[in-house]
Length: 209
View 1: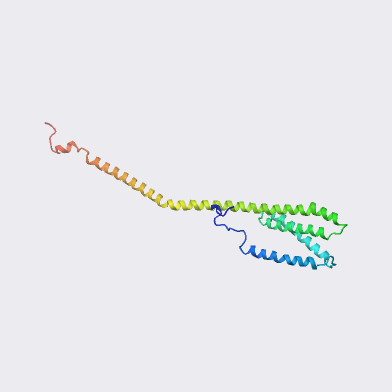
View 2: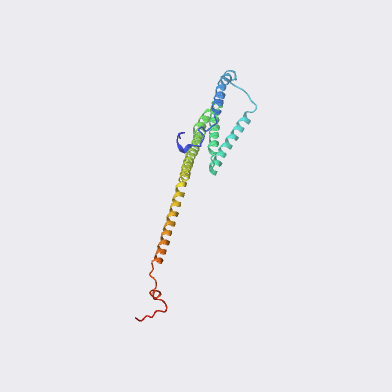
């Protein structure tokens, strides 16, 4: 959708405010050294007392994401794209931690779960998000073109208003002129009408020779 298209006038040029790109670029750049630091300092193994809580809490969030995606899709809400993208992220993270935290005995089930369930579902959720984004973009483009067309028609009507008033005035004058000619013609016919022959002889005149 080009910015020079008249149908896009009045729409924002960017989908996000101008500060988003530099701020998030700085955040991403700042995360790189932190990731390198963790890769060097974190231990290879760690025993934690909240391992079950961490996984159960994560799975609860994943269930909520799947159910919310289903609900927003059933209701036909446009936010289904955002929910589906969040759910796709959770599915990818789930597959990642399943593969990296599983033991050798659990690795086969983790690979099958990631390849057959989690990653395909993540792809489907990503497709839903892209489909909603394209649908919204097409609707906005169509509405913008319709608004531009209505605006052009309104301007044309405003510019043509003096001409239409002038034509109405001319038609009124022509009708008045026709009425005036008709009245004059009737008056001339009455004036040229021959007088009564009896009045020219007088009332007391004898009709005999």
